[in-house]
Length: 438
Image (tube, rainbow, N blue to C red; front, top):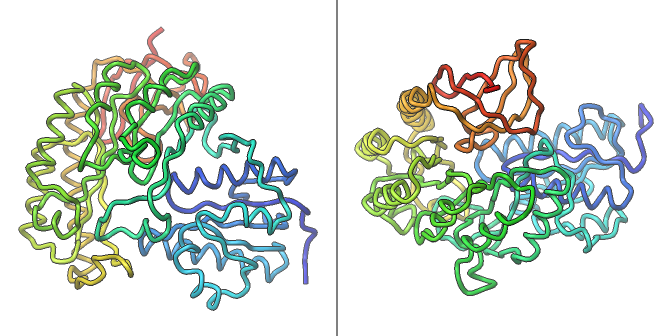
């Protein structure tokens, strides 16, 4: 029995997981708006007739968060606060039969490539003419920009191919048109994302075309920063570095998840590389693009990881001094190759090892940040929070990297979404503080 009047044709879209999921939610919201639905993203008021939950199924913690969110809205439905609950995304793609049995109160389940079917269920038309048009959930000045879907890599620990399928590149002409549309709306920074950006073009053009795509996006009027994420190290297309050097609006930044360094672990992970090859690649990238910021992620506690393997990671992180680094604890995912191995590193030890790596990285980051004191950086202002304007340099991606803070002292006025020249006055482990150059 309903306890309040729900707004008919109002949809609340809730997004869990990574930036690629956020992009999918934005496309869905753009389609709904074109069909005259009232759309909100992660509304705090339960007055929507329809809730659509875009789930994550990547690792155990993310799966649990998705299930908890579904149950929260199922309860709201039973209390009459929500009319319909639909679930889409990776968790739904991967576990639909089991979830349908366990949570029958959900009105319908959809996979990662079921957008047309989801819209049809809502009696909405799929608008093919909406080339790249979507409702941004980010501030208008930056946008996640998906260049391909799926993955063909055989990594032993990863369930993404089970949820997203094989690699499919988006045609270059479509992406350029999308970029032009975003630029007209005031977007200044494109954050290029994919499951593996280095595979771009292989399916469509029989060749890696990431460098050409970056060059063409760089030509779009109004786009001032292009940032590259999720590059796979094996077979990395080196011509990308030439474009990065050529073009001022391509950030000297590379997100390249390396996962481990021990040869034994890399072989078991099916990464197709070795410690020496990885080290040589990182050194070559730094030689070709001096001053580049490399972000990487590592996995701690993979099956069979010994104390010696972990010690090798610590020694290598100290040696390489990555500008940005994050760590995941290994999650034992069914139907992956690694699931055939014994998950033999206790959860507490996985966490301890991850913390040891991050403690080491904290000191490295503090040292690298200290070198920035006295420099002037071009900073894109993202928001105002308390007494500070907060922005990012070309070396930092939103949410995961360092930030630049400028005191809002009454004399300093910065507009969100604008660039500013900031003189760096002091540094902390993961943040810089500066003043605006007049």
